[in-house]
Length: 478
Picture (cartoon, rainbow, N blue to C red):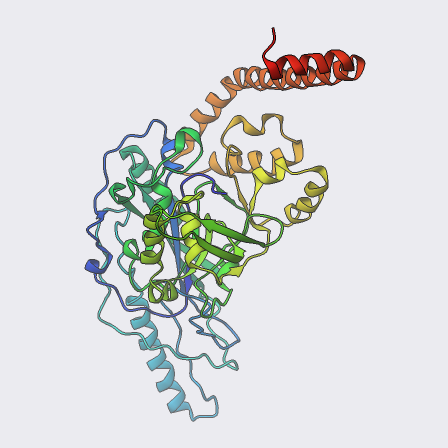
């Protein structure tokens, strides 16, 4: 059900939060400085990482009133709203005074629109202090035309959660952040980005089974359970994504979803939500198994999380208690499904499990294709990694959708161009050996089927001999 061990989170807000103190982000179980852990390959190491993206939105709308509904926008955001005159019927003097005051208020809002602290900003600073001004937010009269030169400003915060990052990757992330901010101007919007890194100790999960695919197995999948410890306390909504997700949509559309009092929204990874009955065996044999009917079981690789409800319902503590008391098949995913029984199901186009599509029957694949025609986020779970040779023999359409698209994005990622070029060359060099291995496995599978068919033919052609051989096996007669 899981892919790699990593994930991503996106968040958007239109409410200025209280700036959290740095102490709120620190925890004894979290190592606050990067380890100089060199990975065996930049991609394999980073595939363990978790990503968490916040977006701060500073809105300057024109010709319509602003809606500052905190249910729709939730984390680390700051509003930047121009205060326009409300009454055009006032006399000229009042109008001039009003516009003058608006200009002053607008300046104060801009000066105070600074970043709130996160655990480890990529620039190496622990936090960025805000100014003392407290901006006042007011509705813009829909009858007043706002300045056409103003733009909407959105600030995305990417939180990378890992058990170790090499120095070269940390440097490359700085280059990426700089590139994102240099190319952030669009016709009606300015996008700003900050990348934060969090290096977490795995000691807390040493007694748990590692999770992931083959050589990339680690304890990093459990880090998502600790997001409340890791992220600033003023965050209200995040989008968590595993690192083996391929995002093909504007993630802001997810933040328009009103979670209300639900803890999270997620996807099963299949065509439709999958209710399931689960029975978890306790480590203590004197206790009864935990039996749960899950109405909407979900994949923890994609979660839009209501952090307010997550904290109030103490999800971290409940999930850790579950892992301590019960045996799990899908690691943290089982824990979260066991303690969060009432989640919102996202459409199948969000987080579809591409490996399950490949394994599906022709009939099922037709159902999957309806989703793939309007796919939003692809989960490259199991062995179906876009950066491997897995898709070498895949259908050309699925290869183009997943593999070719991923490589087009990867090779254009600032700071990591050479890393991905080297990996791409290595995969091409290994393609021949991969083909030989693939064909050998196919031949072995064919031989097994031939032997099985021969036995069936023998039993049909010589029933008495088949019966005699059966008796010999029963009575061990040579």
